[in-house]
Image (cartoon, rainbow, N blue to C red; front, side, top):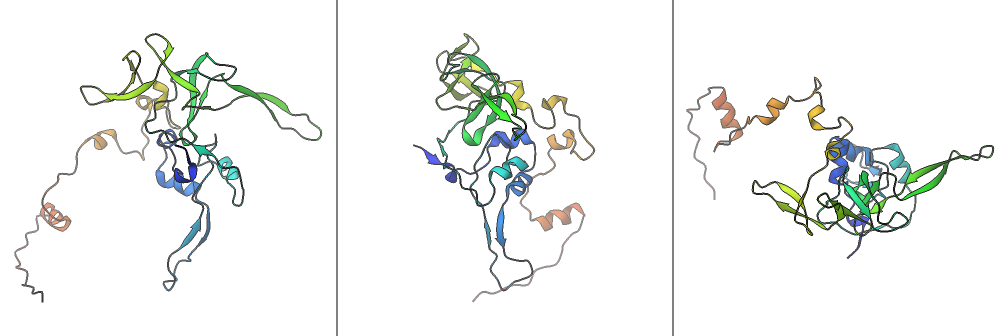
Length: 252
């Protein structure tokens, strides 16, 4: 079954992880509001007219290039996306190409566009593009990598025998999710490049800034649940004892 991106217009989880930006910022940078009820007019119902569907491309959703490709009033051909229930491709994975002139070759995934079921493989599935062409200059020809669909154009490579294999998610005895080759039953480890974001190459090499919450405070548990309301919890922490008896109330 194929459905349009109009029904799946959310930003992919891998895109948010790579950006390492708050969801509110990504949402605000993508927002295209045509009309909104002015503030301070309580006599009108709050209403806004804004764009709800976007055409996702190789540009990140929070960039100006993405906004240019989704300019208001710009009509483009509909894109049909096959929903992927469990995503198994990550940046740094070794894959084998199943179609095109590079069929049978293997390469490393350099970029993932989860919104379109795309991956880019280093040096594979390339085409020539002309950039900077003007009336007086013929332009420059560059080699660019074209996207590949994860549904039927690439396959993950089993590291045990370097051959393509179908993959599914399973759980270890400790409860950790892992990718397992269906053909051999071997675990396909997660690549280190999958941790890369705008701020660091790996999470272990990140240096905390003054505005970051210290890791010790994040890992520590500061909240202990109890059968008390928020007000009762605050009074207890401030050693305030309430000895007044509430008046009886009657409901008729």
